[in-house]
Length: 308
Image (cartoon, rainbow, N blue to C red):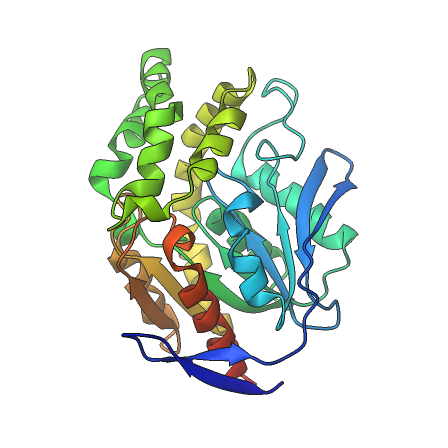
């Protein structure tokens, strides 16, 4: 693949792919034994696969601007996790909403699509799901892009996680109900605009779509179950870190430095276990793709081109 550079105003030269690409994004659904999984797909199936895994409270919609940036160089697949977006969202009494279970379903997704080798792009909830896939399929993981996808205790904001950690320590109904304020439009919008220099760059359909899906009758209990189970992700951090140390797959951290939930030290920590990891910070918030999709896309293309 040929790589050239363009000079952006006020920025360093960034790599741009000259490979011909089908710009179309295809919207598909696959039936698994426990769920129907909606996903977005783009790019040449013969190119390296990149699996994009979203977080809370969003869906694969968060990758709408990134997918065209990557589809010339990668076969891009972006699923909605169970309970999110347009994938199945059964009531929490009918489906166990834990990160172990979501990773199990996404493992079935990987097998259904016959993904024998792939990189993972992990963000927020997508990190514990994707890193469980890495533990399950260590020989299939060819790279990691972590965009505010935490795997270190120092990356957890004490203030941002305080209401949830209170529920972990004392899982009463009162503490569970206190988390319902995190499912409101005010909080959803906050996650998108906090730390963004120019809020007018954030498309309102982003948080509006998320909130519409959060407002479904079954969604609140689904999300409260996942809030409670998140503590089990923290317990797995040592195993994730062992994977980084032993496998040392190419790792790129592209991080919104103003994220109120996952702090910059969580990005820097990747270099502790994998000294070859690259860390790039952007002056934006949690949903860095809302403001920096082009820059992040160019960084990903250049990083993986350099691994060849």
